[in-house]
Amino acid sequence: MRIAICDDIPDQLETIFKMVNEYIKANNINAETRTFLHPDTLLEYCKTENAQLYLLDVVMPMMSGVQLGLELRTLDREAQIIYTTSASEYALDSFSVNPLNYLIKPIQKDKLFSTLDLAMMKIKANEQTITIKTKHGLHTIPVSEVECCEYINHTVKYTLSGGKIAETTTIKGSFSEYIIPIISDKRFIQPHASFIVNMSCVERLSRDGFTLRSGMFVPVSGKLFSEVKNTYLNFRLGKEVAVIC
Image (cartoon, rainbow, N blue to C red; front, side):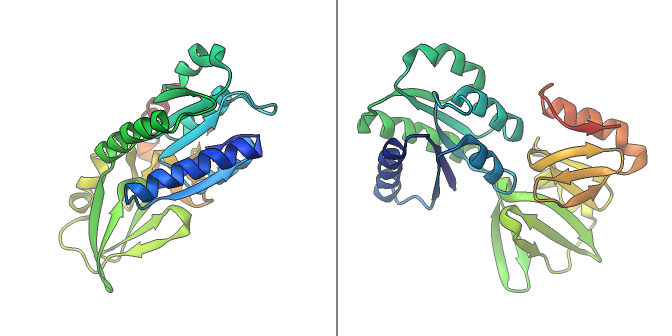
């Protein structure tokens, strides 16, 4: 699990970081926590990594937490977002982001921990995993970490977040049958006979194909382009996306 915290005040960022790490250790959660002083740095990080939980300050001079939350929602509609701020008057505005909670600073540990309990329940409920057979043995992968899959000579190559690669041994049956557990997830689409793509990881769509935030290019079959484009736009729910037709 990845957790990202963004606050432009270093002392407050450090305080939240320590409390989150205390919670993680107390509950024996396998998580990586990253801190960001600037929203742009967090958005740059999100080009290659997806966090499952974000804790965001609301009042920041360069970009408000609400604006940042809306940007994050265009990348991932399933992530949990918690706002932390000393300005309660922005609470109503923040609900356009569908946050899990709005915590007023100074943050009380018990309120943060109860909110984190709820976040973990939601993340666990949303998280799916798949287990694949590789030449090194069985490998369990969170579906949220899969950027795309490619069918190559009766094997399936998984490109994962952070540039990691996992490749199966020879699979039985067709690629279409093999990917049923993944393609049933609404984040995924099959734009080509040999590829499936996690739409949460897409940077832009052109007539030739998808460009992922990692820089990888995935082709779209010409006869499927119209259907793929409509599915992708519906997935983004009308939010601003880069589509070149």
